[in-house]
Image (cartoon, rainbow, N blue to C red):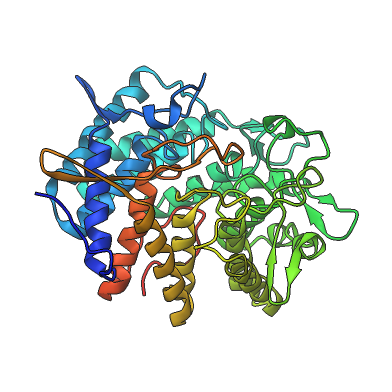
Length: 453
């Protein structure tokens, strides 16, 4: 059996679902079976690297793949996907009990690369299965997060990492605590997150051209000098601002809201504007003329801050900047044109499928058809770059992409949620559900857009 589609045939909603299923088939070829459960080999992305993200992390490993397969199971009702999730969870439980040390990570308790992301996905699985072992694991992770928190130097709040304060590090841990507290009705976790978050209240810095910013990541990570500023989302100012807004939402403490004052002015000072569109630079002052478009260093991520700011303050200027960032993506010619910073990347972190998630999120919020149409254009791009193969008469789909971003000539076929095929499949499932009139999405902790349309 083979899949043959006429070159003249228009994309149908069923194509998105077929590709999502074929992605799972490709991921399955990377399955590693142990006596303690399964995980998926990261060989496609890690080859030639001295150290890579851990096999169980959300960004590239099993936790992210569980998240994807759970969504695929919900859409297809095929129990093999849920069973794979359970087998992978068994291995995660084994790792937690026997070897908690992780591979490359920003913090042991990080969301994308550490145990906050693991806990987030295991909690998703608990909500489906009601297996008490999953809830116990989440509780143990959170208890250890709280136990290992260190008092801030200024005596106000707690921290886990001195080098990574953004969503890739401490901010992501705080978001997980708030999320889990809500899902499991644990007020003490929320109270601790609010207390810990006070460590940010004296951390903003004045920008010489106007406004204020935060340092989200140690400049040494990128080999930059001490004056390095990351203005964008998971590693920079926007993500910390988003976390402060969430802390304000949960606490009502206006000091968190006051801590984002000046951030909008900072963005106004650094933006590259073109009429009703704008983009933020990759970094300051080092890489001022490179513009990523994705989640990691671009508007797909940073728009989330402005959206949340608008929802809380109702300031029309915030939603104007939100819309300007989205228009900035479109004005570059994306998704069809791959400009510098948007190389041949299709993943959630820095590529096309992250745009799919953004456009569908905005469409879910305001119902404007143009955003659904932009999302469909991203879907066309994703399908156009898909590589098909067959094994045992089963269609498999993968993408060759430059996931290292700063090394656009390095191409691989990653399988993870943020770096590869699982995240692309997640986006295609969203498109399928949107076209079906049944749109819903299991959003990440730092994604504020509506769950349904």
